[in-house]
Length: 496
Image 1 (tube, one colour):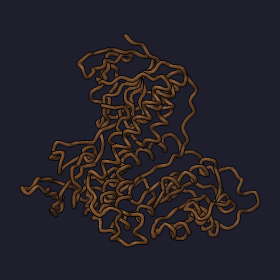
Image 2: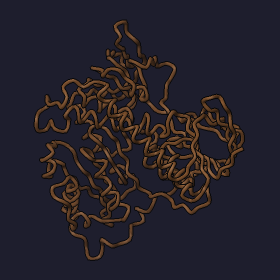
Image 3: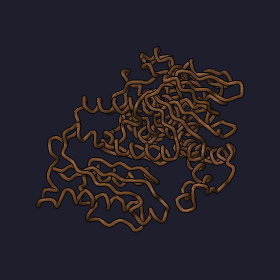
């Protein structure tokens, strides 16, 4: 039997970061991956493919240049599924090569096969050649990720009714698309295909979408989608999906309305990939969505020595936070000191346009009873925005009236997921509105929007009384209690 200090099941963001962290601490590490190549869902069907598809669609369609050259402008007149896939394959090969090199450089062993528990410290690995081996470790980290939720009533055929994994294998670009599910994944793909001039309809039983995002940002986002003729059928449930004799698909909603489309993408949730792990042998039990409960500070499960990180533990299900969860879990697992992650982390939605946020929303400020003021900047107000031909996009900053501290950053528009990190740093370092007023930003840049938004808020707030900008945070702005934080996280997870 092979003995290790840490066994990691899954090589996605959480798994690979955990394995490399433990290896750098001179521990013997094994990574088990059942996919054909290392990288997990993030590299092969999730984060990297969807973002590569987005970038390819925007480049080939000429989307970013239409502000100057008109809506009919195209870089490539006829865009095919092969055009999108070509760049995707190049990107994925690079990601796998980098990851394999990291494992080799840090002497992380990895094995291909399907793992299942024999006991809390032992795993059985079914290899492709039907060989079975057993391995054991002082600690085990489950980073198996998730897969698309596929209900029995949905007539999936891999061609005209598909899930988000199958989307990457499509043979032809549809002229019309119905997306069932207005969560992050559904909205990302819906807007990408809309940018390719596919007629897109989004259906979701909830009357609102992206409820964890600041409401003003969502309203701006909704306006932009409808302005380019996307149909948002919110508050309506898709009751029946049927294949038609001519190859098209008919979707019937609970209002009785019927939509005929070339393709249906079902993107209403994901399931934790834990059903093949034989969790019972380890004394573990997953919830109805296949997810595992963990200590939010150490990521240890209810069974000592068994940890879980990444999408399999639920919200926020981001590649960035999964990496940090894996790193922390690995340090705890091998007995190293691990600091609690930063309270505020950025959330990025790679839709068209992008949305990114960090900190509190305006709605959360009201719920907590914190007096506040907002500063707004439109990208078209910046010289760089004019140079880029932007006629949309905005940055919203939220400040405390008592302490003048930055408490929320919300951005919609080009490079939002990059710009948010300026606000993230200021927020976590407890900076005030004066930071944006008194500091110089490169010109011309979109980052200059921070200066504009800061001045907008400062004009409304007035100049700070002497030394007040250095005052300690008011009691109302102290970190939320664990119960309040859990309640807030549950609300965001439900929204996602």
